Image (cartoon, rainbow, N blue to C red; front, side):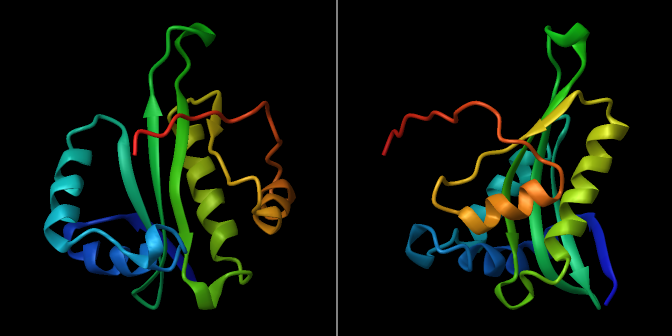
Length: 148
């Protein structure tokens, strides 16, 4: 099975919403098509914020968001934040996630990033093993404040 990675286009939004419904968060609810369109248009305005789609036989099987930002520290080397990564439920453990992470790493290297970071829920032990198998290291603590 050949996994093709490419940047998301507007026509992909229904497929992306379906993938996000499989994450098991937000009680299975996803954005409406109209909300997704507004967010997609806004993301396109950011200089280095993009969505990327994994496909097999032109079928959407995974998606990720990548923000590459400029920095004053690290001698102005950019860094990246990976977010909203999801692989279709029936294809997890079959190489799609590995291909997606390899692709994201490649984009970061092309942009000269000194690091790519992401967070993962502390209870997702299997996911942590997966990320570590790809060479990712646990680093520090992730903190957040909720405004809900």
